[in-house]
Length: 369
Ligand code: TTP
Ligand code: MG
Image 1: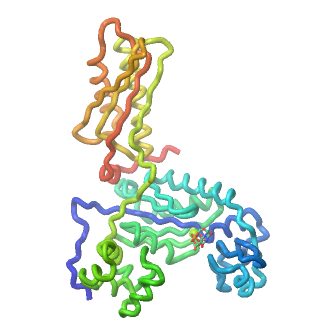
Image 2 (image 1 turned 135 degrees about the vertical axis):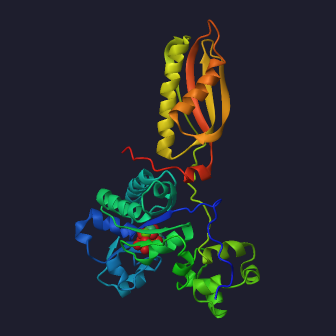
């Protein structure tokens, strides 16, 4: 019984849509891809059974014999004598990983890679633009399979924790979508060990307290969480209830988008300067659109004939990605610097001060590729 009031998404906390994508039996699948003789067979990628080698991963055919990652290769061979042992080729895995991450980034700029073969994607903008989460997920699986030949398992939910658990449920080639509002029900029957941050030791301790499922965990009172998890209490409780709010971190969050140009010969005439600025504004606007970004600060950069370089900035009341707004604002900044006889070697335009919530609310942009 869960007697805690259900805190549903409120207007100031818009629903996110998150994908967790994870390639199936990654290293082994690449080996089967590159060597057709290995397809449909038990493949064990890793070290030698003579030494102290371990299994990095095993194909699903080998997993049927109980072979799994981190198992000593010696034990793997005992379980699956017909298993084909293949040495890992990290360079090749990195190469394929790069291709797959690129495909993820064609869907959204908000990609958080977790390892070579898995990532979170924030697809909120795509969903708000009219694409059902299921369609985004199916497209992604199809694209990855078409381009690389590998199968991808996908979980979709309103937060990272639910999406990650969902992607694992139907492997290989899995697809599980947890609709908004159904997070807690989805998690309730699953084993506590599936929750991010609950390792085997904690799971065992919880079992001793009579807690086997995530639902049983979610039903515990807050003071119990405080006692058991200390500083992690709220975070574990939120995850158990399916209310985790951790954003997707791209790790290289763009701070600004800009473009500049040096002229073949210095320009002073205002019409020509404005034309150059318009070109730069268009360039910046398209770049912002591709990245799914809007910013509140517009910067104009100028270099004079004598190489004096300066920037002027304006802050807008609302974030923009609009070519016209970027042009109008940067032109206003440049107009104030125009003087008779003054000529310019270089002009630049930039947009910065991006805000995450605005990124999340962007409409769907048509893919240009
Ligand atoms: P995982 O995604 O954990 O495993 P997987 O892709 O092989 O299988 P699946 O996702 O279908 O369950 O890890 C990705 C790769 O990382 C894996 O192919 C090999 C490597 N790896 C190791 O080298 N050692 C390990 O202990 C684990 C778990 C993975
Ligand atoms: Mg994987």
